[in-house]
Image (cartoon, rainbow over all chains, first blue to last red; front, side, top):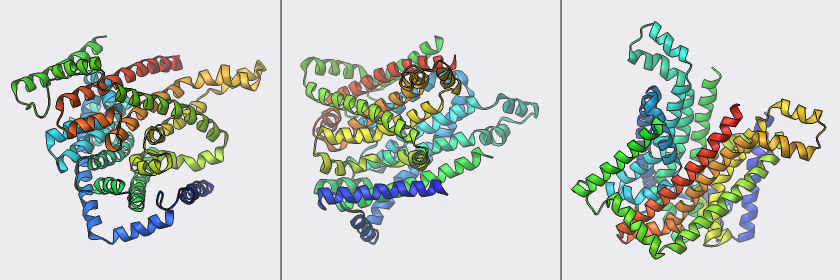
Length: 243
Length: 248
């Protein structure tokens, strides 16, 4: 209980800071929390806004699905094949920490302008963390699980679904949590550059004509959605961890 | 050792395959130039000094952002650790922090710091500082209790305990934070330049893309990839040695 109060107090402090900054720099430079919420409300009532949301969600859903399935499959493969995993891990870690945005022109040239480039860019961000977490989960799995599966003479499909997957699920969800945020970031960055639709495009056009209330409204919406999804996955993770 | 060789072989084969596909025309020249030509072009650009000022701007921003995040993150970590109530309140927020798409707040920084390096550094610090805070908290948590007891037995003064006992004991964890901060500083600076700025390497790549100057674009991409890879490899190397010391 006091923990939640503390977090609420910190959030309240952030809100106060926002309001103070707004008063310091003026309404044309930074919209107040109240103005932002009002603007968000009026945006939510327009059909055009929902078209942009739908476009972003379509790209995000496709990218996230590919990252999820591909990342877990690749992670299990690299986790089971120890040599392949050892060879691939440093390469993946390096790919994870390069600024992938510089590769976006390459993605655009390969996939053309449009939704497939955004999806590819989202996958580039989301696939690697999910792969790395799944791979490490398998490597750190207690060897006795696999031996038990052998003793019980489970087929490899049986042991994958009844032994390996349940054992690594908590770590996989940690990876999915990171992959979720990064995929969203990738899709948004993709929309901010050379795109005509989506929330990222809305942001960049608002930046270019200096509509600070639109920027803050979209940023607020994205933050709320991203943090909510993240907290839900975190909650799921805790449940599993303490099982 | 053989794993290392195998890795080099895999990377070399991949690059060779791309080179071959470019040369054979499977990948059209308009999409990608052969890697060997990227290297040649990069050499030419570096020798001519065409992009020297952009390179200098970007690297300065990265260094400033990384140093600021490490110092501020370390101090903030110490402060938060000293105040358990605040820590309890912040922990759920820290766990969700990287879910926030930080780049969308860039316009706010422009109004606060103006167009230019200060806003870019602010975004990069915002991105990098939290991993340093988390690493600092983790590092202080993991200092073995026996070390502090030993310090007390020797009647070391507080500052000496901090400097000679606690700091070295937490160092491996702190260094992980440094490593992440540097990576995030690179990502923050280059990405801000790419999307929203008028100078720096990120901007130069976006400009080359918009003007169909593929040769310049790929040479600059290669420059960033090679720089980041070298920096990361060096930091990883130090990190591994520190981690090995921890397990001793």
